[in-house]
Amino acid sequence: MSKDKPDNNSLKQDTLAVRAGSYRSAEGEHSESLILTSSFVFDDSAMGEQRMAFSESGNVYSRYTNPTVQAFEQRLALMEGAEAGIATSSGMAAILSTCMAFLQAGDHILCSRDVFGSTTVLLTKYIAKFGVDVTFVPLTDLKAWKDGVQKNTRLLFLETPSNPLNEVADIEAVAEIAHSAGARLVVDNCFCTPVLQKPLQLGADMALHSATKYIDGQGRALGGAVVGSRKDIDEILGFVRSCGPAMSPFNAWIFLKGLETLKIRMQAHSANALVLAQWLQQQDLVEQVFYAGLESHPDHELAAKQQSGFSGVLSFTVKGGKDEAWKVIDSTQLLSITANLGDAKSTIIHPATTTHGRLSPEQRAAAGIADNLIRVSVGLEDIEDIQADLLRGLDAIR
Ligand SMILES: *Cc1c(COP(=O)(O)O)cnc(C)c1O
Image (cartoon, rainbow, N blue to C red):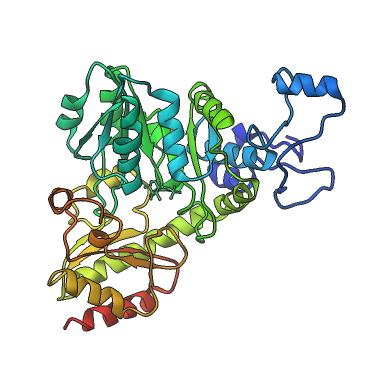
């Protein structure tokens, strides 16, 4: 093992998070190199010809390859136990690129019902426009997954744990259903990150991320990524290179640094969220708490088996309806009212009128998004300050 090129196969995950994909220029900088350039210079025309034909390795243009972006892709892939990874300009770009790589007119995609709002819009409004059929099934209903598969099903897509109710899918079982139908399973692993859940080890073909959330962890930059086999990632790479949803080198540099502290942040988010969930359960003005880390959650056992922690997002219902939920939220002073999650700063939001506001009242009822539901992404502040702030909110409806 040389100083410049550590043998990644012999390193453990915590070391990979800090060291993998490191690239050092001739200057010898210790921090990851930020190669902020749109194109790369050739020595002569012959080199230009070879590089443009991809017959010689080396950089051409940052939409194709960029060393900082590649370092992020390599580090994330190793952390997920995947052969390869591809970075994209946002989490939605990762989902779009995966669809564009593997679907064509006449195909079918089977998707869990409670996916991220923009994912639903992407599939039903845009991907459907190109003759791809989309159906949705309840995340935890294995019979519905099995029955939902059609002859033309190419992709199964799910997000676990779900937002904001913390429902948990049995990844291994859904992967089996996908593979017996000759389809691929894609798991949106945004809420857990590879620190808490490794979908590929459970049989999924690809895992994807909104790096915007926990991987950055400080609410600074948009980005996404997909990891999987070299062959599958090359399919997506072809689309990204030619069609443009590439990650900016600057954002890749932020996410590389984010991966270095991801484990201790995920552990701290999870620990704070569990204490908060248990505390909320004891509040007289709280009706129900949705957090898979609680033994009372219907998917607790599966989550405990499949994940090594329960992440930092929870939700709860308060006594009353929309007015009471808004009053609780608006009476907090510390928590930020924002739709983002996975940030060091705790955030609070009313799902029924924001993240799930585009659904009809019937769709919301089916998805369990009640008017008195509040979602909190538990940050890294002192838990006593978070509790005091929520108590201030609850006291406002007392
Ligand atoms: C935010 C989010 C996305 C979309 O990611 P962007 O980076 O905002 O494009 C996809 N899936 C989940 C679960 C998310 O939370």
